[in-house]
Length: 187
Image 1 (cartoon, rainbow, N blue to C red):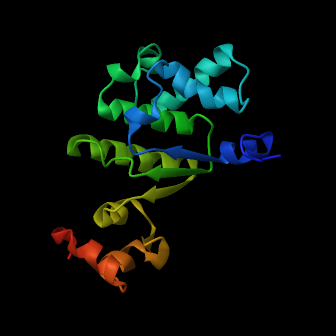
Image 2 (cartoon, rainbow, N blue to C red; image 1 turned 30 degrees about the vertical axis):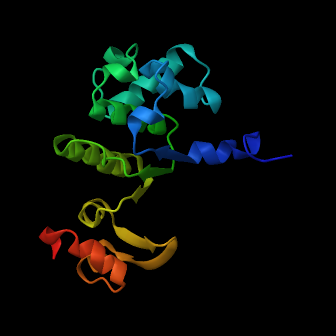
């Protein structure tokens, strides 16, 4: 039988969570914010329900910057701004208290004014909860701001890895150089 979907993956799902690029597509439009954030807690059987569930959902929403959390419980994704939707996705990932969050271009679809707020939330959460953040982006300056180390993939292969400063300011691979040169402010 297949491992996919089985209880064998439960420990992995608890330790690793994903933040998708398009929060609107990642959120079920028929579920409230409470249901969305509670879903991983229920499916991984991390809480019983009732007050314990409400407390964990509140904690995750507050950590993602949605305050007061109770004001968002009964709202649906279409009632939220783009930044609020992305914060709900972040809260859903945080609710299970993972060791690693994989963030796939988490700010690329947001206005510049909201990007900095969401990035600050991610940086603060990484430090506060002592978790790893795998931040996937094509934006080298953004990677430099948020990462300790940068790995560059080209055509599906790892071509360069090093400290954020080393990769940004002294790249060796032509693709990394092209990424750097695509952003004049860090030359």
